[in-house]
Amino acid sequence: MEVQRNFFIFSFLFISFLLFQAWQSQSLLNNKTSKNTRTLHLVNNEQHKDQIIIKNDVISMIVNMRGGDIEEADLLAYKEKLHSSKSLKLLQTSPNFIYQAQSGLVGKDGPDSSKKRNRPLYFSDKKFFELKADQKELRVPIKSISQNGITYTKTFILKPKKYDIEIEYDIYNPTKKVLKLNMFGQIKQTMHTLKKHDIYSGNFALQTFRGAAYSSLDKKYEKYNFDNIADDKNLHVMTENGWVAMLQQYFAVAWIPCNTGVNTIYTSNLTHDVAAIGYKSSPIQVFPNKHTITKAKLWVGPEIQEEMRLVAPNLDLTVDYGWLWFLSQPLFKLLTILHKFIGNWGVSIVLITFIMKAITYPLTKSQYIAMIKMRRLQPKIEEIKEQFKRDKKRISQEMMNLYKREKINPLGGFLPIFIQMPIFLSLYYMLVGSVELRHAPFIFWIHDLSSQDPYYVLPIIMGLTMFFIQKTSSTGNNIADPIQQKIMNFVPVVFTVFFLWFPSGLVLYYIVSNLVTIIQQKFIFSTCNKD
Image 1 (cartoon, helix red, strand yellow):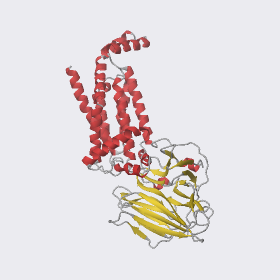
Image 2: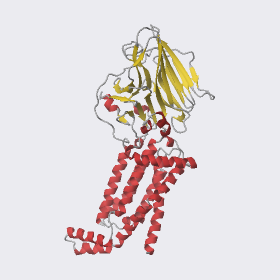
Image 3: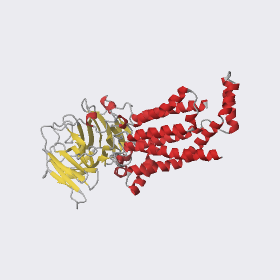
Image 4: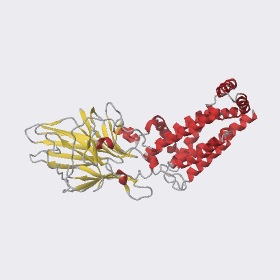
């Protein structure tokens, strides 16, 4: 039993380490130094605040007519907080916090070029545009005409129930020279005051990655943290297609180029506290007396995997399930299928727990059978210890010989622990990364499965079930060393404290798992005792 006890202590320490890791950012950040690049330091002219509002049934945007940037965006289907009447504001502009989606035309003849003193001023015939119920598409054109007569028409195209917005530039060149320019899309955000404006940062157990990300031909999905940008370790990636994004828990803003040719992905530290990630297209030529159209897509919304996958390749990878993505993704798909039939995410979690316990039942059975066999061998083990009490090496040898004769693996009883923990952690990543579970109710006082139990009832129940399993198992009843016994008794308390801040959906899974384990334990023990 000595090996088994020591292994249990090691397992406890290892599990505690995994749980601690789950509290940290969900994946390692990329700290590689990249090449510096010339970037677009664009600031809207604050003295001009003409704005228009563009709205469909899921998003409402405010566009500044100086440059045509989206300065604010409200997600109408999502509330800022549970039970709040306020829609979630994703993009925003205030004196203390900036989060904007910028776009324009730069290069030799671009009106947004850094050589220009002011960005172009657009005009529109209305101030408010809304997609009607019978419309399939809302097109909002705004125009700017340069001093030499070049017309730039920037059109925002919105569709019903869609979070991807098309930004189209129509450039008309009445001059006699060929215009050379590039389209760019850039997302800028305040870095160091994020916690004051991030409604998800209050709970340290739910911290997830917030920062920049991009996709290229070489890297399907790569995160780039604000620390690198603040230190001027900027990206300079040449790629066809690709996209750039700013990420936070459950929501994303991303530019997806629609042009052919090579795009340049870059990051920039615009000021001491504002970071930007963007792309610049390959050169565009507009010949005399001709029109040229160039466009891009902008995603402003929740990280809905199925929809993001259709907008751009690999955009759905922004739903970051960490290093256990290969388990989290199929679990989420199974959970989604169950939810379609049941309509309650909490009940779906209960059912998925039953399914996982049924799949792992053979391992659970072998675990408890191994415990029973070990318990039956205790008299022989004690005889060996007494017979060779002055030779520890001989004790170990004789015990191993005994295990071989009885065909018992002393570590076999702990295999299910290592099977269950990856499932547990993958569910954790799924719950804190899937927007579908945000503000999803269960029953009674559990109104949000993605956040902690407000009254800590579920963690306490989980601790009690864990304590009961420990006391009724052969491992918990056969530890003579008082120090090890105290450690064993302390394990449920430690886990209960851990679980106080964990998502209630995850705690629900563990409670149901423990209850099923208790039933399986009773059944296996009774069957083996009859034998």
